[in-house]
Image (cartoon, rainbow, N blue to C red; front, side, top):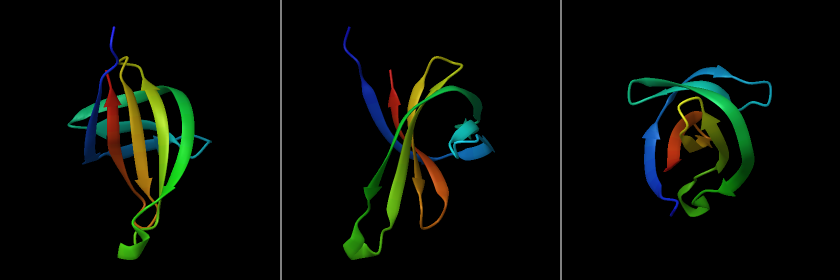
Length: 86
């Protein structure tokens, strides 16, 4: 079976943060997701020539069975769904 991903880039509302400073619960497209497992985290430098700061990524598995890569923009403290794994 092939694993598919979809790049999204849509904002999410964080309802609760965990002790590891990763989201424990968030709302995306009107649906609430509870995080059951946190995978790896990584950082990427944004477009420095445009004044973009670092972006923090975290992979989370949710109670619905979906896996998300979430992204936090350090400059604005906003979180987004970066990618959804099917």
